[in-house]
Length: 315
Ligand SMILES: C[S@@+](CC[C@H](N)C(=O)[O-])C[C@H]1O[C@@H](n2cnc3c(N)ncnc32)[C@H](O)[C@@H]1O
Image 1 (cartoon, protein in one colour):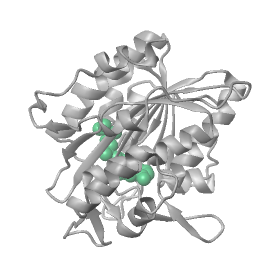
Image 2 (cartoon, protein in one colour):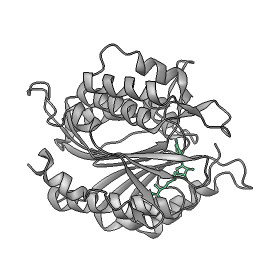
Image 3 (cartoon, helix red, strand yellow):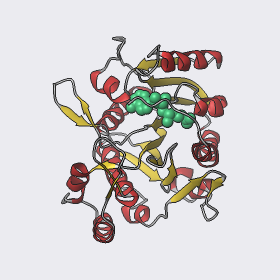
Image 4 (cartoon, helix red, strand yellow):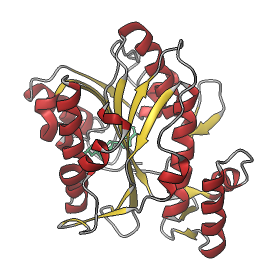
């Protein structure tokens, strides 16, 4: 990358005003501390904020070659988690590399033996970027998410735990080839197809000028892409999902628009029929996006816990 993370007001808004009420509500409902898997960054602001609700951390942090000590962020994160007295396993390297190669840069085997109940996949870059695979090929970054969901399936079988929440943040930008593949998909739900066609017709993606790798920007298309991809992954593993409205916010610079999704999920056993999602694709398409600003969420934002209370998640 490299991309040393610096906190800022919009990120704090997402974390404190959107994520925290959701996590507190689910924590109360599920009655268990979270097993966290994600990208906390060296200062672990998210974990510090949610520490009373977390029992264990599985984290990833990359090497930063711009620093005298490229391992500094990784080491700082380990120190912070130790100071918080939280059991942790921090892998060195890109999450997608560690997950796909099953080992980190220090040759530590990647292994999870408990069902993850809180994912904070707080990516700084685009989820349509390419990453190398162990067979010598390349795949898109989001394929690592599919792999993680497959691992969750196996853990559900061995642990019986079934509920989890996934927070996912990414650069609000995509590679055109991947977006065109999505737009051309034949099996898109009709509401997504209509929304994609409308968006594509009236508002073509715009190139983000400062990016090295030809990244394009259209928040609505990316929101639909992410929903369709995640729904597909979840359906493939018989997971029922409830998507909250997407949140957009400006990252640290004007070249870093960000998009954030929160999805509450429940695994169904193999004995149950294929899940039928009570939240339809049309429901998601119809949800207005929320904007996180310096001083808070925009005034017309819904209360996330009201949305949860009105969903199947309360059952
Ligand atoms: C956005 S920051 C984390 C913010 C934190 N979750 C919070 O809420 O304050 C992401 C951190 O993960 C690291 N990072 C970004 N993408 C990564 C990836 N794909 N794999 C591993 N680490 C990554 C970055 O270096 C950075 O320290």
